[in-house]
Amino acid sequence: MATAGRLGKITTSHGEVTTPVFMPVGTQATVKTLSPEDLAGLGAEIILSNTYHLFLRPGHELIREFGGLHGFMNWDRPILTDSGGFQVFSLAELRKITEEGVTFQSHVDGGAKHFITPEVAIEIQEALGADIIMAFDECIPYPATRDYAQESLERTLRWARRCAAAKKNTGQALFGIVQGGMYSDLRKRSADALVDIGFDGYAIGGLSVGETKPVMYEMIEASVPALPGDKPRYLMGVGTPEDLLEGVQRGIDMFDCVMPTRNGRNGTFFTSFGKVVIRNAQYEKDKLPIDPECGCYTCRNFSRAYLKHLYNAGEILALRLGTIHNLFFYLSLMRGIRSSIEQGRFTEFKKEVLAKRESINV
RNA sequence: GUGGGCGUAGCUCAGCUGGUAGAGCACAAGGUUGUGGCCCUUGUGGCCGCGGGUUCAAGCCCCGUCGCUCACC
Image 1 (cartoon, rainbow, N blue to C red):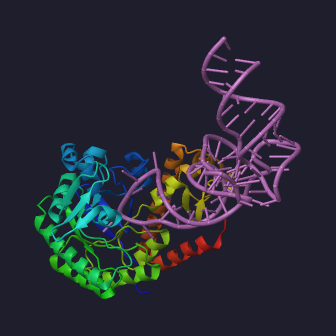
Image 2 (image 1 turned 120 degrees about the vertical axis):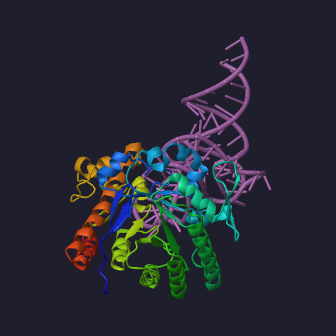
Image 3 (image 1 turned 180 degrees about the horizontal axis):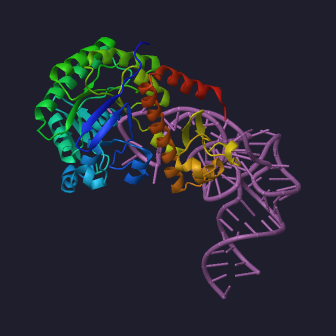
C-alpha cells in the first residue's frame, strides 16, 4: 500500500495532541480504576468521555458547575466527548429514532424517557466542556440493508448540519461522522457531504460492529480520500493493535477503543508476542511478568502467578494492574508508530510488530 | 430421650404418580472494538450418605444404620 501514515498535531486550549494517537475511554468521567495521575504517567495525551452517560448521571448542568469535565474529574489535558450516537446502536432496544432526534428509555433512572436531538447533544457537550465534541449520529447495526444504510446516513447528515448550526462560539472543535454502512459509495457520499458542511475534523463511525476486517479496511479506504488532508481523521471505537497499525497505514490519526481497558479488567492482556489470558491454568506458578519486554508498573513488579491469583480471587487490584498494563501497551505502540513515521520506516515497523505477534508462543 | 425434616457435582440446591440425573456458582478453554467491573459460547465434573429389601426397573417405595438440623421433654 502506498500510504504509510502521517504525523500531526492537534492544538487545544488544554494542550497539544500528537498524532497518530490512542484515546483511552473514560465514559463515566473516569478511565475505570485509574487516577488522572496514573493516566498522565502512562502517557495518555487525550481521553474520551460520553455525552449520553454523563447527561443521565450526574447531569451536564452539575458538571458545568464544577468547571466542566476538566474541573469535575481533575484532568487538565484534552478531552473528546462522544455524542451519544453509539448508544443509538448499543442501547437499540431502549430507543426510538425519528427525524427530530432519538428518544431513550433510561437504563439508570427507572425507565424515564429522554429526548436527545442534535441540538441537545451539542448543548450537553458545551456544558461538559470537552476540547473536541462530536456531531450526533446514528451508528447502524451490521448487517444493514443498503436502503436503511442510505436512509440513516442522509438523516445523520441532516443532523450534522443542525449540529454545526447549533454550535456556539465556545472554542471547542466539532467533528462530523462518516456513516454509510458497509457500502463504499455511501461512505464516499457521506464524507463528501460532511466536507461540504465543513468540520474541524472528521470521524469514521459505524465500523467494528461485526463485519470482517477486510470489509472494515475497505470502508476506511472508501472514506479517507474524500477527507481533507489538513484535518484530523478519527476512526471511532477501533480497535485491536493490528487495527491501529492498519488504520494508521490508511491515514487515520485518532483512535479510541474500550478493548485495552475492558480486557484489562477481565484478565486478557496485550503483549508484544500476542494475547495472554492470565486466568489460564498454565500461569499458576509462572514467575515471569506478563510481558518480559514491557516496562509498565505491573510488569516491573508482579508475576503472572500473582496476577492470576488476583483475578481468580476477584481482587480489585487485579483490574487496576491489568488496565495499567494494557494501556501502557497501547500507548507505547502509538509512540512506536509515531517515531517510526518520523524515521520514515513505518512500513517496516508494522511488519516487525505483526511478525513478532505471530512468531512466539507463550 | 421422643417426634419431624434433610443428606444428589467442589458449593447452594432442582428432580412431577418409580423408567440408570439437572441448574446456578466455582473450575477449564474461547470470545469481547465510540464500556454497566459486565456479558456470550463451549467443556470437565455425581456407584444420588452407607447396607439390605420390594420391583422387569429405585435418587424416588420399605427396613436398618450413620451424620446434620429443628421442635418438645
